[in-house]
Length: 199
Image (cartoon, rainbow, N blue to C red):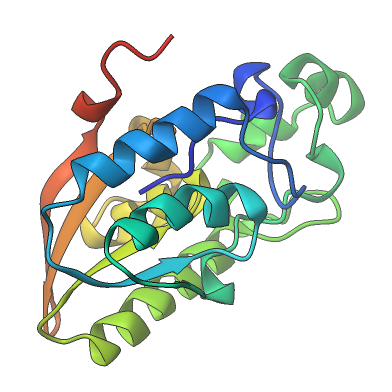
């Protein structure tokens, strides 16, 4: 699942590795996630190293009597100098970057001072492989970030990575994958039913 809401999400700011905290809505979303997943036979909870994911994962882990385990490969894309900017500021400071980002070659270009989306996809796929090997027959929970989730889904659905923007994943949304050897099956995508009536 994706972490709960932060003020940066609410304000529509570009958000990469800046370690921003959940806001009040995000904390409530984390509690709702824990309730929604309380009946799942989860044996481990993994999180990106950033506080917004750890704080989303903690109530889920607590509901299952588990500790949150940090997985560095789950960290959000490093968007470098774009972090914290509005999209108007991005267009002003880096003319053409957003247009280039959505071309076929876009995922192969690094953000100014950051990384490439193809690298995010590669490490996200490596993280999933590693976790699946550690838990071949178990249900686990993974809390991570937007670019990590979308690049991974593009890989699993065999969508060209440049088309990842056709997918959307809400904050605190749940996506479920079934992994059996080399087979990947999408069981649930961007489920937000548990967030009904959060302001």
